[in-house]
Amino acid sequence: MNLTLRVWRQAGPDAPGRFETYEATDISPDSSFLEMLDLVNEDLIGQGEEPIEFMHDCREGICGTCGMMINGRAHGPQSMTATCQLHMRTFQDGDELVLEPWRASGFPIVKDLVVDRSAFDRIIEAGGYISIDTGSAPDANLIPVAKQDADLAMDAAACIGCGACVAACPNGAGQLFTSAKLAQLNTLPQGQPERYERTEAMVEVMEEHFGSCTNMGECEAACPKGISIDFIAMMNRDYRKAKFRNRRSA
Amino acid sequence: MATKVSHGDDAATGSRRTPFLVELYRSALGKKYLMAISGIVFMGYVLAHMLGNLKLYQGPEEFNKYAEFLREGLLTPILPESGMLNLLRLVLLVSLVVHVVAAVQLTRMNKQARPESYRSKRDYVAADFASRTMIWTGTIVLLFVAYHLADLTWGWVNPAEAGATVYDKVVASFSVPAVAAFYLVANLALGVHLYHGVWSLFQSLGINNRRFNHWRRALAVGFTVVVVGGNLSFPIAVQVGLIS
Ligand code: FES
Image (cartoon, rainbow over all chains, first blue to last red):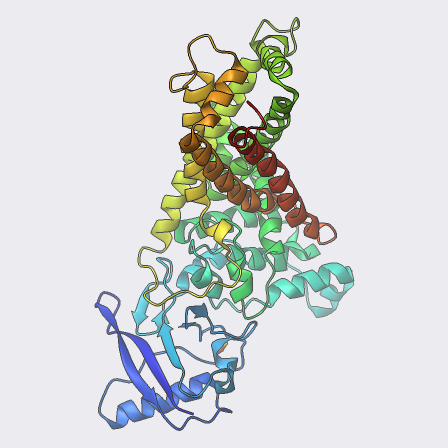
């Protein structure tokens, strides 16, 4: 199949950017989206041009690095699918694809389609861990975890930190990521001792980098892992409780 | 994390501690929380306002009596005349300030979170017209409220002659096609605002339970239809001569 690509090219963080048009020819419908970009880049290199910079690592939908806007949607048109898991058969021969990097002040553009997502690391650093000693593996298994709680924590832990939620959100809010990272710890017994300190700290770092949630649900629709906005409600509830408790113990 | 040991100066700051709601308001999450609470106040208000105004259909006597009752009869003699009314007005005013100021501040924050918008056309999946236009539907409603107060509460722009009864003022106002049209537009905007707001407030308050989550949207739709349906009927009834 043959496609026309309009790709955002930007030489560096402060350089001006623009869309460039490329032709992707003879693409197999069975190839993945990133393989298609690899082929385009090989052509570009052959012509002595700078290849299109994009991020990728695992190419199996678990590392979260490959995000980009494809035709106005984070990770492209297929729901619950990261860019690397997207196949060219999703598109039609002759389609025009517009590729743009995530746009958010918390995710500054590094080059072309690559953004710096380290603001997410700042949020994790604020409390996205458990610092109590949980012992070795057999000890951990001695703490009973209700099936429901385990399932909920696993659903939240599916987050790969790709940033699609921020990218898709009309407000550039980081609520879905932060709430998932909170929920994966806050729903488990081991997460309880630091629950409210964690919630307050992570929410407040999130607010330094990202926008405010207006419950549009666009993040949930864009999330390649199908993380539910139910976690956002859980975070809102915990944050209010955290403010109240931490104030009393301050 | 660790409990602080109290020192002399700690006790001093403790006595000057900011109230909980003020502290909550400092965060964006807290602002949304208070927007949800003030939203609930407005929901109560618009519902009561619409239900009370249904008395228009019972004729001038009943309607004027109802207006009189609001001014004088509400919880008197426990409270002085107009006491309860003024108390309600105060609650509404505070809610309005909180709701509007928080909305403006959060909108500014969101603008800063994406200073450069997407150059390609967005293809929204879940964000609907209502949720993306809250700031605009809210502005329309706010402008309308200002006009509505100037028209019927303070009477500055009311077309009826001085000394007219409340009923006559309403009919005089709604007989002007432009006023009736403005009223219709504002109430449609209110409907769009409520459709998202009533659903959204559950999320903001963290009221979420998979067993009853589907009721949140149903409540938003039901509430919107009842309030806006009732409100829209008044100028239409005047325009077609059902109320005169
Ligand atoms: S490359 Fe790892 S998630 Fe796509």
